[in-house]
Image (cartoon, rainbow, N blue to C red):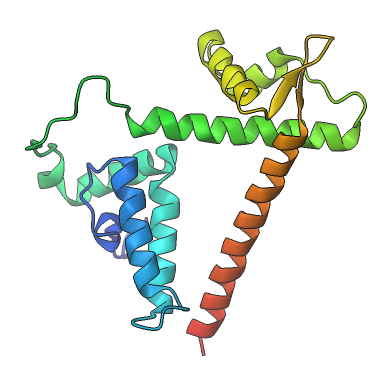
Length: 196
């Protein structure tokens, strides 16, 4: 943010604390998005809905949230220390960061394999090494990604030892693309109706 710009507290926009986990962030977004959605008959508010969507889009990305938090805690130094929870998380709880990173990695792998399948449907395999290099992850993490995508039925190991996307994987990519397109359309419609 440049000098003179007002710092926007995205946590306040989503009505959560700066130390909230991914689940809390998502729950808050969905609750407020339903309330202010332009199609909602009770209290539609295009501007608030747009602000919510932008805040959630930034904060759900681990890397963008980390950059934002640097600025946030400079503006609110008193909020740096994490408040003590009255309900400690049980041992073995999952941090939201790695789970979100994994979801992004799975999407990147599937997008790459989808494009490869479209380019050459009969020879769509990709050597795992190239996918691992694209993700810049360890062998163990890449093995986890392969295992997950194979168990979901989204990828297969070909007879040549390469990874290729399956029909289920293609359907998943198409479904996610449709969802993303619908969200963009909704945001643009809200922006257009909010400027009248």
